[in-house]
Length: 121
Image (cartoon, helix red, strand yellow):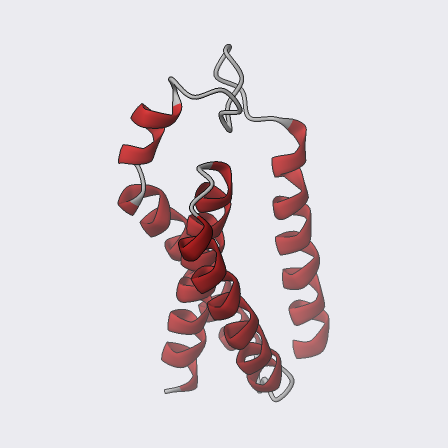
C-alpha cells in the first residue's frame, strides 16, 4: 500500500509541477496559485512518508510516479503549446530547444532521487 501511495503522491507532485510551470508561462494566476499550494502540501506529506522508507522498492515506486506524472501533465496540457507558439516568451526557442533554466528542474529531481536512494541504503 505504501508503494501505491508513493507512486500516486509523486505522480501528482510532478503533474502539479509541470502544470504550474506551464501556467506560469501563460500567466494563469489562479491556476498557478492552486498548483503552488498543491505542490507545497504534497511535498510536506511526501517528506514525512519518505523519511520512513523501508526499502529501495519504495524509492522505485516514488521515482516511477514522478516520471508518469510529468508525462501525464504534458499530455493534459499539450494544447497550450499550439497557443504558446504564437506568444512571446514561449518555453521553447524558435529552434525548438528548451531554455537552460528548465534544466534546474531536472537537477532538483535528480538530487531528490539521490537523497532517497541514500536514505534507503
